Image 1 (cartoon, one colour):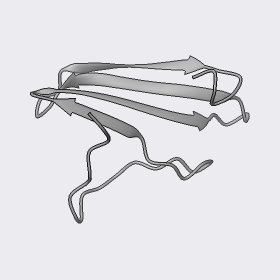
Image 2: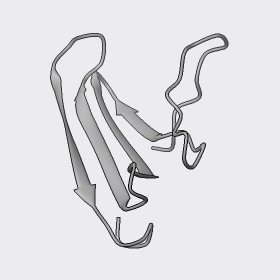
Image 3: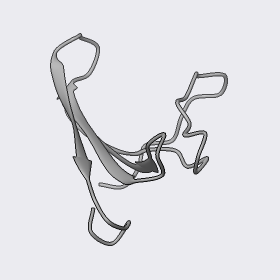
Length: 71
């Protein structure tokens, strides 16, 4: 499944350093999201989130990576 289109007027998170939207996949009530970006010191990070749509259940992790290809 590919990225999900955002509804018009829906608030979205953007990265100040890259300006890229996260990639998001949904299946049933579950979602997964990944976003490569840079931290305050310019190091690469891959932030991943997953959980259940419409609830507060879910988790997130930030993983350091040397480049976008490593993520």
